[in-house]
Image (cartoon, rainbow, N blue to C red; front, side, top):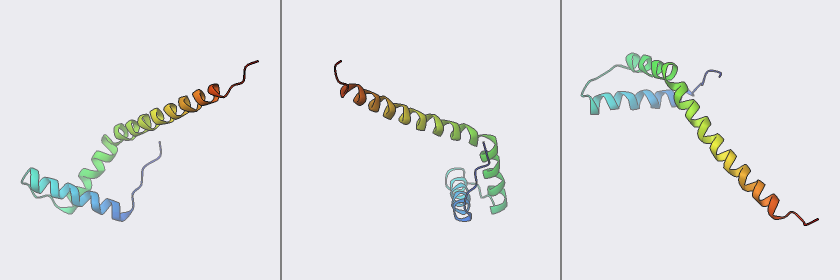
Amino acid sequence: MSDIEFTKEALASMVHKLRTYFDDELHQEIGQFEAEFLLEFFSKGIGAHYYNKGLQDARAVFESKIESIDEEIYAIEKET
């Protein structure tokens, strides 16, 4: 798996959400620098779990579509 890269705007948004969460839910302020390090830890430490779950979900959708196509192909088969 290659590293996942985000745009500067996406990173800024995630850092903002992380800082807001700490402030609103934990009543603790964290700085920009700390939030960026925490985001990097989550991304590298547990991000692969979320990535893999996304792939599993995509695979399930793909397999469902393939099964549907397979059924449609059998439905149009001619008797021999």
